[in-house]
Structures are given as structure tokens and as C-alpha cells.
Image (tube, rainbow, N blue to C red; front, side, top):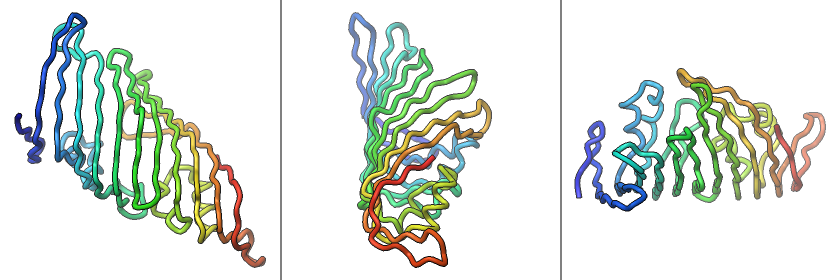
Length: 232
């Protein structure tokens, strides 16, 4: 057992090291890590200072030879907190629970999130993602599913800048009721320097129930609307 000091945060941890014919594995378990600490280590991560989401988790590194990891596996859990990241959200995002499991193949330059589960006090978001380094930058592909989202909460839950056209139309024309399920496929290209992000594509569909829709102001609103809408 030991304590890590990360920019003033005291993080309780335990560790173990195991050897086999294939190589060695080092595993560390920790508790009480707040992602806001990232803001102290890199200017591009300054927005992380707005995150208050204590994490418990583990990291396991596999080293076939020497002390240089070839693969890393990790898991993160949180009982809740809040996320504020620049102007990405209209207001701090209240989180009721978080679970993440992933692996990183350092030799191949690939990070894979096998499972992401995010509780938002009723609504829930689940997803998977793969990040692959390419020519000094990175390409990201993600599949995201959201469930049980009240329509009137979309303004604070739907990140600004993500499918801006669809977001603007939905917030302007739909109210009441909810989105029982929404699925989205996202592809991003991250620049090699700085926080620049090029949105390659976002597409998906959502199932709505009990929604009030205003298609054109001179017309009366349509109430208790249900169906499926697609967006790009």
C-alpha cells in the first residue's frame, strides 16, 4: 500500500508485480482520483479543472521484456459528481454513476473503450470507442446509445458542437415527452498539435414519445407525437 501525490491530490493505492514466461504484469489499484488533476499537467487539459468526479479504478501493464509496457488495461468507476468542460455543455453535467473499461495497445498506437456507462440521474448513456493514432494525429470512431432522456433536458445533455444542425432544430422545435432511445455513430479526426478537432461525421436516429412538435409557427403545435427521427 502507498499514497500517490498528484498535483496536491492524495491518492490511496496498492500494487503488485507478477512474472511469467510470457513477461511481467504490474497492477495498481487506486481510489479517490479526480480527473481535475489533469489540468495541472498540460495546457490543453485546462478545461478538466471543472470536473469533480472522484474515481476508483485499476491499471494493469503487460511488459514482455524489460520495463516498457506493450499493452495496458484499465477500469474506472465513480458514484457520481459533475462535469464542466469549457462551453461544451450549457451547464455542468450532473453524473450519478460512471463505469469505463478499456485497453491500450501501445505498440499499435490504439486505445479501445470496450464499455462506457454514464448515469445522468435517470437518463443513461452507453457506448464504445476506438482511437487510432495516424500521422501524428488520431482518428476516433465511437458508437453511443442514450436512453430515457426527457426532451426538455436535451439542451443541457446534448453537447454543443455535436451535430449542431440537428441539435439546433430539436431544441427549437421539440418539447415535452422524451427520447426513449437514441443511437449515434461518431467519427472524429484529432489534429496532431493543439486541441483542434475536425468532425468527420455524426449520424444516428432517435425514438421519441409524447413530444410536442412545432414545425412552423403559424401552425398549431402537434402534441403527443411519437416516432423515429434521423440526424446527420
